[in-house]
Image (cartoon, rainbow, N blue to C red; front, top):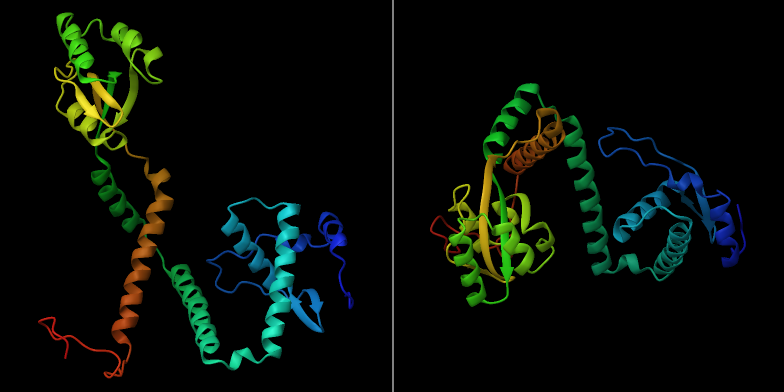
Amino acid sequence: MRSKPFPKHLLRIAVASGLLAAAFATPASAEDKTPAGDDTVIATINGEPYKLDVFRLFYAQRLQQTGGENSADLQERAFNEFMNLVVSSQEGEKRKLAERPDVQAALELERMMVLSTAALQAIAADTEVTDKELKQAYEQFKQQAKRTEYKARHILVDNKEKAEELAKEVTKKKGKNFEKLAKENSLGPTADKGGDLGWFDGQQMVKPFADAVAKLKPGEWTKEPVHTQFGWHVILLEDTRDAEPPSFEDAKPSLEAAIKRQKVAEKLAELRNQAMVELNEDVVKLKDDGGEKK
């Protein structure tokens, strides 16, 4: 262990050489019931040892906050930030700031939050999901996932008068000239494809467009232009189909997670209902059944 100041210019060398490589190993799974501890000391600072597990957690949080990827540069920045955290917290100890009421309240809240998260993770790890529950959830999911998909083309222009003229041209040819008119007149990236929008469902389109498409039958077009924030549209509906939901195997992980979340919420409600609570009614004002405060 180093017992003298650690020169900053050596930090990159230490990280790049793999001296801190163990710090960035994959942490224990959130669902592990008894994750293994690590007594390895990453550094002793002003005589106080700091464990690798503490830095690993700090680094994992930094990765999450930045949305970045594990890299030597991020490791270096994180280690420098960790050093700042250590020396400033040590200064707080020297100043006996932990005796201040506001600091004590903050520390107690942080402790409660950490324990709460760990408890909910432990409950989730102990929660079993049966095949019957998964299949019931999948059937319900399939019903909710039912939706119609549309295959359509559109001609997009920037004024109503031009859109009305184009709608009349489409009507004259009974839609047979739609692709040609779209290539010649339409704005936006679909013009080169004759206005082809491919397959989509209503939620993928702005509401006026989706509502207009839903009223059409395959082979029909909008006789009146449809106005959206993008401009004026003439729309031709080519076909419809029922969307296929994901297979049971594909949906299974998300269904299992959803069922576990529901069961954890039920367990939490049970714990609340069983809790013996004595309120200080000078601070917490209760309401009667009519909603009036006592």
